[in-house]
Length: 394
Image 1 (cartoon, helix red, strand yellow):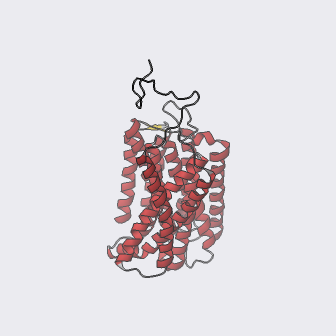
Image 2 (spheres, helix red, strand yellow):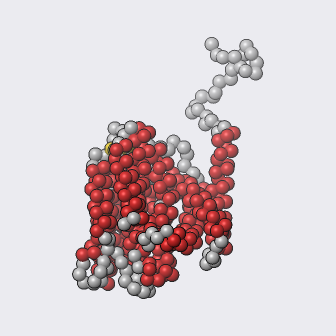
Image 3 (cartoon, helix red, strand yellow):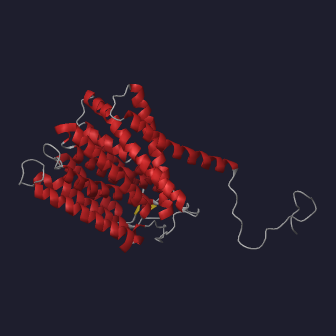
């Protein structure tokens, strides 16, 4: 017997017409949250870039440094939002590639600009920043993603084939560009000769290009999220993807936000360098701080993906960022070295080589089974803590 109508008791309630069920209209709270999110994520990148233009090249008072830091954090959150919009439109693994490449290109610009303006003291800045990016991505982002995924589903599941190939590429790039310069004999010190640097740059671009082709064309399914039984998930969400106009707007705002992030990080760098010097910390800490700031958008995006049971997306972001950081930075630095004064220090010391070796070994053992628990996430985070501690107290 049909239920009574709420408006006319005793009368049958109206039935929905035949056909597919109508989509429910979002509640008022949901609509309000979406409106607030769309407004501030549009407003913040523009405000941040206007502030960057105003403060660029000026000595800021402490209040100005604090305001720039707040806008820097807000621009990071806005960049994550717009990156997720673009990623939802283009799908995986293209979405992870968009954020990784965009962040890395601007990271390269930041490193080159600091090296040009910093003088001989910045001879090792590229090495310190790239190595810090590798350790943060392979231990910090991977560890957090596995931890969040395992807390949610007891076991974090991902595709071992694609992740293993990405790890092999990262390990090769790191060895060729950061380890070999310590052992070559053509030029004294941990530096490449001109020919060796040119070869490393070409090899880096070739490896990165081959990986992108494999990830997006040849074996795209290897880099898609999987379920606990190994079934590939070809769609990220059930929600309708954004329109083409919304995607283009988010892509533009993403680039604006990333420029603001790196530009404000450069504005903050004198305060960071002064704090490092006053604390008596090594110069390498500056590279670590820069890497932490630049990789913050990817870290937040990776953790959010892990919370949605898309651990593979998180690993794509982590290892793709490490790969792009090396594969794009080293060739750019090789070209910039034509105008840079002094040697370009690329070779790692013994302590960092040990950390790199154990990171590659542990990540290999994590990747091979295609699933991980809280233990693996904790191990990676401890390795990141070791790196950060030894950077401060070598």
